[in-house]
Length: 361
Image 1 (cartoon, one colour):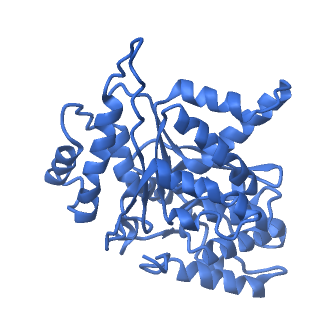
Image 2 (cartoon, helix red, strand yellow; image 1 turned 30 degrees about the vertical axis):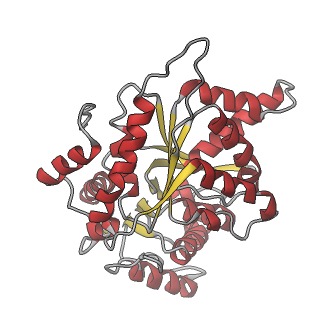
């Protein structure tokens, strides 16, 4: 898709505007030369010889800005046009889950330092790591990431990441944050910081005026949900596994901060507030299929659904769903109907045009 290795990213971007795929955005256009610099430098063959000093690795980039500004789209454009350069394009949270699992496996072999073999495996596979949504909310990640990135940088791996916040705001109120501060300095030393200041929230604009609550939950609603999903993601998805207090919460489809799951996958399992808070932290838009009518017959599922909606509401996550009935008609009998009125009200509010805009966007 648009893989034209001899053409600059600026020209590829202009072609996408010309054919109507993208709208012009000066803030996006301004960062393209920085992506092009990295693409050109990592594409250069490394000259070797007895007396040749290894060239200094290219600086990476830390691209930050408000939700929906096109950071992920630009990263896709970059990663898709790297030619033969080994690149891994992955959501940061999913990557750190992989690293933790690999470290657990390494410990089982008896190694003293599990980070070293895990970092070596990453280094052997890629020259460029392209992360989406760098954020540190887990103390385990906070303690790992500094040494891991230091090993990657030392080996010449170029890292590019998007984030909604400045490096100084990563893990801002986290436990033992003083031990994390050297990692922030490492980012500033090895990556150019670039703020994407665009007035347009494209994610909101795509949903502006669009239906986001589909009822009844029938074939027509499923087709509508598929259409919204395809429009928002524009590419293949993969599962996202969130590790919460020793258990896995799995979102079966995930891409660029957008996730899709069925009602029973989130509310039919014994999950609690911490699990739903982790979901709300990990995603910006959540699609939920097949919300059923709720009553005393599925009271536990109803309670979990209330907790889930509260977490999504407080985190300003954009919710799109198919349901058996309108919010006010989802829970008509049984214990908890009065308490569900607030959930119905929140579901209704979350349908409103423009809901979900972040305060800083």
